[in-house]
Image 1: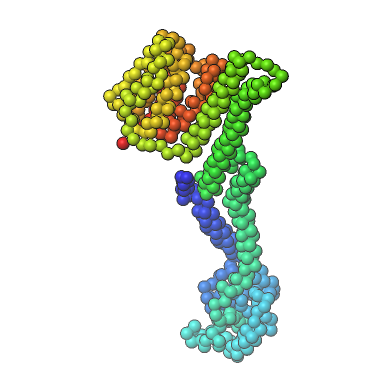
Image 2: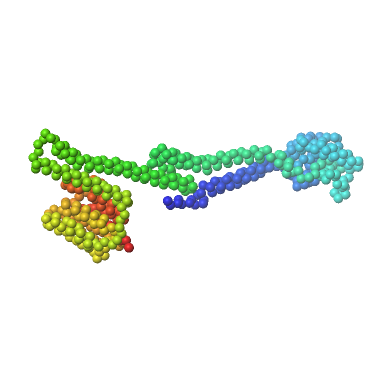
Length: 480
C-alpha cells in the first residue's frame, strides 16, 4: 500500500500547535509589557530620582518652596497627594515634632534616627549648611536633605539605604500584573482551544463516527479529508481502507451470489437427465406394461444417452474446478501452431466434409510457435472450433488464424454463422450459460467456461465479438 504524502511542515498540526503557543507567549509578554507601561504611566513620578540622595533633595526643595509660599500649608496632605505613588519610601521630620512619610508602613527605626539626627543638627543657630564635602555622612548610609527656610533648619528628609525601588515596585504592581497575567493565560488557553484544538477535535470526531459506521456494517462511510495536515492524512488512509473493505465486501457478496447461482445451475443441469432417466426406468420397471422390443430398446438408448450426458456434465464440472483451483499443473513447452491447427482439422474433418464447410488456416511466421501446455491449448481450440462449426451454415467458412504483435500472440476462431446476440456477449463465458435454444441443443454449457479457465491459466485473455459471424480471440503472452 503506498504511503500517504507527508504534509508540508507549515501545514503540520504539530508545527501549528507549537507556533501557536509561541505566538501566544509572545502576545502574552507584549500585553504584560504594555500593561506595565500603562500602570507606570498612571503612576507618573513613581521613580522621580535615580538615587536616594537625589530623591531627598527633591522632596526637601519641594517642601521648602511649599512653606515659603504658605507657612501654614498642610504638609501631610501635600506629601500624600504628590508622593503616595513614589515607590521608594522616605520620611520627613519637622522641628515642631511633626513627621510625615509617603508610605503608610515607613520603618520606625528610620523615623527615630531621622528625629535624632535633626536634633543634633539643630544645635547650630543660625544654621549654616556646610559644603557637601564638609558635611558628615549620615549613619548607616542613608540619604538625607535638610529643609531650610530663611536660613533656618525646619526639618529633615531621610531616605533609607539600599536599592529598594524594584521590590517596592513589585509590591505595588505585583498583584495587578499577576491578575492580568492569569487573565491573559486563561484567555489565550481558551483562544488556543477554540482556534487550534476545537477544529482538530471536530475532524477527529468525524473520523471516529465514520469508523463506528464501518464497524456497524456501513462500508460506504467516509471521513472528510479537508486540510493537508496529519488529521487529513489519517482521514485519507481511513478512506482508502474503507474503500478496500467495500471492494472486498462487494467481491465476497458477488462470490457468494455466484456460488448460489452455481449451485442452482448445477442442480438444474443434473436434475434434467436424472428426471428423464428416472421416468424411463420407472416405465421399464412396470410389469403390467407390455412394451414391444423396439420401444424397450429406444427407452434403454435414451437412458444410456442421458447417463452419458450426466457423466459429461460431471466431468466438465470437475475439469473446471481443477483448472480454476490451480490443482492441475500445466506443462510449459513449445507448441507448433500448424500442428495444433492440423489436429483440429483432423478431428472435425468428417463433419466439415459432410456439410461442405471450409476450414481456413492462416499462420504468420512470427506466430509459428506457442509456449504452453499443448494438450490444454488443443482442448481450448477444439472447443471453440466445435462451436464455430456447429453454428456455421452449410457451405460456410471457419477460419483459424495466428498472429503476433509485440510480445503477444493472438489465436482467432472466426465463423460465418449468425453471430451471438449483443446482449449475450458479456455472459457467454459464464457457467451453464446458453444464449438461445439453438445454441443449447448440445453440450453442458461449461465448454466456454473451461476455455476461459485454460487461457487464464496460461496468463492470457479471451474475448468474443461479432464481425459477420462470431469471432473468438485468444491472446497469449510470448514466454521465452
